[in-house]
Length: 143
Image 1 (cartoon, rainbow, N blue to C red):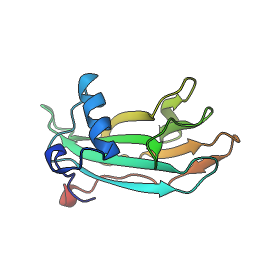
Image 2 (cartoon, rainbow, N blue to C red):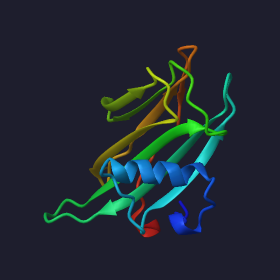
Image 3 (cartoon, one colour):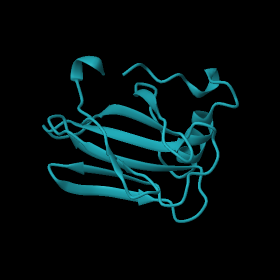
């Protein structure tokens, strides 16, 4: 993944500026060394945008970890449709699931794992259909 552009360099109307600010307010800061990207998903009734950010976590023991942050919003920045959900699993175990129950502009899931773990994610559409995404893995050489 490419390096995330620092907030100061993003246009003020870029949705990721709002996302970073809201996450920071809730206590989750994305470090400067994080890598990230987004993908637009052309689904009805509102096209979705999935942001992904990863970074290495320094630990005090011999088992280094990495973190994955997924943020689901809309391409236009309007509220997500009711019934949309975002989930992350590792080795078949559900780690976190968020869903839209009130009008919100985005959902996010933040998980931590060992360097050899893969995270599987899925997006639940208002129709109930689950869009499964390719697994997220951490490559130490790209960090």
